Amino acid sequence: MELQLLALFLTAGLASLFMSWVIGAGSSGATPFAPAVGANAISTMRAAFIVGIFGLAGAVTQGSNVSEAVGRGLIGGVTLPATGVIVALLAGAGLMAVGIYTGYPIATAFTVTGAIIGVGLALGGTPVWGKYQQIGAVWVLTPVVGGGFAYAIASVLPRSDAPEKATIPTLAALVGVVLANVEFAFLGSGGGPGSLTSLGQRLLGIDGVVATVVLSGTVAAVVWAAVYRDIRHDEAGGLRHVLLALGSLVAFSAGGSQVGLAVGPLLPLLDEVGALSPAVVLLGGGLGILVGSWTGAPRMIKSLAQDYSSLGPRRSIAALVPSFLIAQLAVFLGVPVSFNEIIVSAIIGSGAAVGGSEAIDPQKIVVTVGAWAGSFTLALAVGFGSMTAMGAL
Image (cartoon, rainbow, N blue to C red; front, top):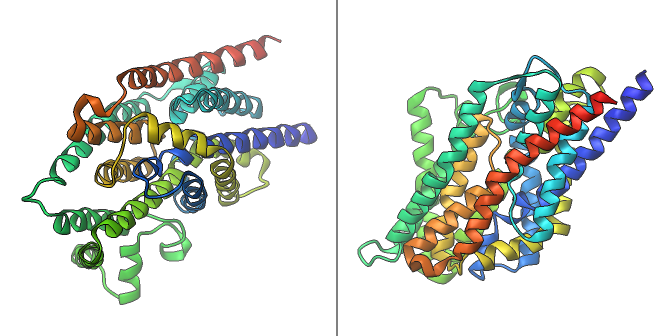
């Protein structure tokens, strides 16, 4: 029985690695740098290389929250066995592979979440309505908030009364404050999770809300001054540097969020087998994302960068700022979120602000939204039907 369990665990691990590769080749690998490629700030192949590195870093340092939610928070009353994990991961990865082949960004979060819920219900599990409400709220509000924020930024940047020497550094400072206060693995006391500001408080021997505000303000001031100086010296070069930095941060956030979709289902099996620590599993998932980004992401990057709109550096910045903020909120909440949904909504919002309906492809958007809506339902049905059929054998 132990050998059989080990064999099933290894099979589940291979399915998880396949899902990691699919994530890297699809949503996680393509979306963070699609605006930068569309703005001709970086080549497609170089973007795929960089996004893989930052995706790996994000998976290792920020992947635990979403992994816990996916592995233990989507279904109640039962623990998915190894066969259930395999079915859920293969169902989700299979639908994602179809999206990569056809060039349409099927949402990883929708497919994996739907497949896990379907498998869990087939095993007699109970719905976790509170978590579903939280996830549904994030999924529904992401296009509204992300697209609206991108529209607002893109509307302000070209205005003569809002010089870029002030607006771009202010946006960068906002991103810097958020980055300084989100949690990373190993930065807390005792090697636990902690933020950069909490680390600074321990090093300086200070504590409290005032200390957090002061340190956050210092980070904001340093980032603002550095970006202001860069843009004042060379406006085009400064915009390009900001764009590449934002793309890297979104890639980092993508790794922290998306790795949970691949390795989260394995967490209950770790308790049963006791062979590996969650940190090692996160590292394995991050490596899978890295390989997927390097080998499979260029096709989807090209699709997003060229098919959805013609992006310039300002519109790209307008798209990436809300993408980073929404991604970090999802990581904090432990909600599996689609990076395709995040970035495409932001691209549409920024494009509408500048070019109106001519800047986007309505037919492509309709097909994409249809793929989002159908992927969750189809994945749930495939997971439920496959697990029910296996139980009948």
